[in-house]
Length: 84
Image (cartoon, rainbow, N blue to C red):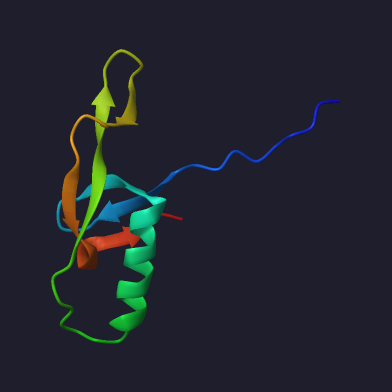
């Protein structure tokens, strides 16, 4: 029997509550998000801070969603929530 290995994904999925869409954020940018939420935990008014990521688009050929790597987009960190 073959050995199953863990394949680590470079992008983490987040929901953008302002745009109502799913976005993919690179691991290096996720560190910024974590420190932002730790720093502003419990505060109602959170400052504006941007992070780069990619939108999900619908692929008609495969009838599924995929990450659109052709366009890098900036998102407000305060609008992001991690998808579990």
